[in-house]
Amino acid sequence: MSKNFYVTTPIYYPSAKPHMGHAYSSIVADFFARFKRNDGFSVQFLTGTDEHGLKIQRSAEKQGMEPKEFCNLISKTFKDLSKTLNLSNTDFIRTTEDRHIKSVQNLWSLLEANGQIYMSKYEGWYSVSDEAFYQEDEIETKDNKKYAISSGSPVEWVEEESFFFKLSEWEKPLLKFYEDNPKFILPESRRNEVISFVKGGLKDLSVSRKTFSWGIKIPSNDEHIIYVWLDALTNYISALNYPNTNDDLYKSFWPADIHIIGKDILRFHAVYWPAFLMAAKLQLPKRVYGHGWILSGDEKMSKSKGNILDPLEIIDVYGLDTLRYYLLKEVSFGNDGNISQDKLESCINSDLANNYGNLCQRVLAFCEKNCEFKIPTHNFTEDDLKILKPFEDIDKLRNLIDNQDINQYMSFIIDMLFASNKYFNDQEPWKKKNDKDRLNTIVYTALELIRKISILLNPVIPDTSLKVLNIFDISKDAFSLEQVKDHNFLKKDIVLKKLEILFKKIDK
Ligand code: MSP
Image (cartoon, rainbow, N blue to C red; front, side, top):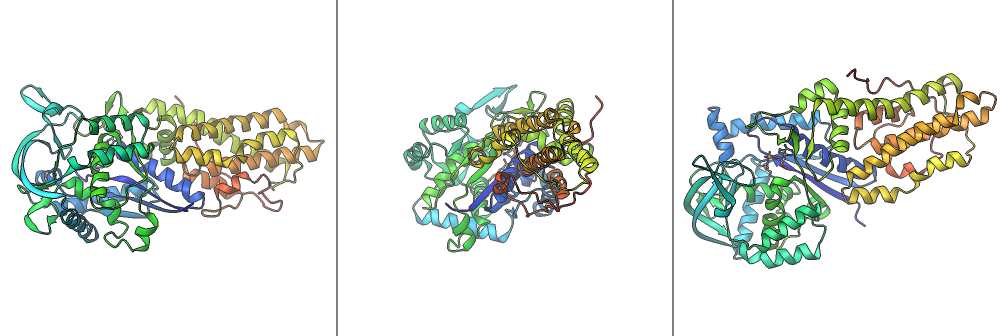
């Protein structure tokens, strides 16, 4: 089995500053990247910005700026956000970079050479906000204005000469591909949506524009620029040095293991992207996962609705790891989720302060008082082996992650936190002062539990889990998922380090 893993986030439109929805896609992708890295995989993790198209051109014009100058500015805020979110991305791609432009033009020429492109005229609806074409039956009229039903974005009528991609030819091959690869689109409900869309019939797709200029030129006709979604989707291979398909990066990491995206951009990733790749005779990604929206109240957060919860503000007040924990645990992955200050504070108190924080603090305090703050000796009994046993089945956890079952993974951790706190209570080491051997073993077992849980929590709360692992002198890159199985990992001579309070309880 290949020990390479390639995960991507959508590349973000730098049309306005980043919000919680962007942070969510990125944090989820980072979670998978970190889990796989801890499991010994070589991980390529890509994020970036999607900088061409009318949407960006108009945003720049509004600010009285040149598009490139505008993109430089906003793209930087996304790059900074990657750092603020502690993303472990290995690359950050901008679609205005030469490596990407070369890659898109090459893919275009290949599609042309394969007879997949022809010139015609586009007449129809277009949403600049979604950068998407809509059919008549996908449009509704409100107050005499036309909107896309799925996104609520305004649409405008477009009539212009355009190159078309023969998407209709790929209807049957796509349906066969979905059938042969039942887990290509997840979650299941989204897969069904896509299949019924494709079964409804695919029309050829307009893939060039000539009434504005902010984009990548078609190599054979510089009056046209390439449709921004064909441009943007190609980023996933540009970053692997496509068109050099003999390049090590490309050979090792394409096809991608998973594209993490929001449900609103499923059609582009699960229909257009595989069709482009099939038409170019390139391999298809292994999975596209369309997550739900983060809602503020009951509405999708967006700038136009004015209900954005700024991730930076939340991080400022509550810290990054709490936000990461909340999004990964409280949102049922694949469905829409809600975020509010109240729910965030409850989550900090119950899970982080009372459960994980409490386990670490009380065990360490007891160890300091009774075992000279050293790893004590141990002689396991049945009770100890019983509490340690669930950590032996690492394949079960690997399986959960390979099926993107983040919630079951989190449940396992939380169950083990409760069980560990209960174990320490029930064993009552404070009553074993006359049985040093037993007292030592209870402390040892509890320390092992803390170590194991901290490794499992590392992809979720990287900084905090490292602080805890550090008390055992285990540093970044010096631990692995495999070590979770080992019940005798901690060595006798280690002197523990002090641990600061991990999460402060919030008065509500
Ligand atoms: N540029 C395109 C993606 C191109 S990928 C080849 C794009 N950009 S975006 O900035 O508008 O959105 C990026 C991602 O953020 C999408 O996956 C979208 O679903 C996600 N989110 C934007 N708002 C969101 C929420 N409120 N909640 C969760 N995610 C949402 O689309």
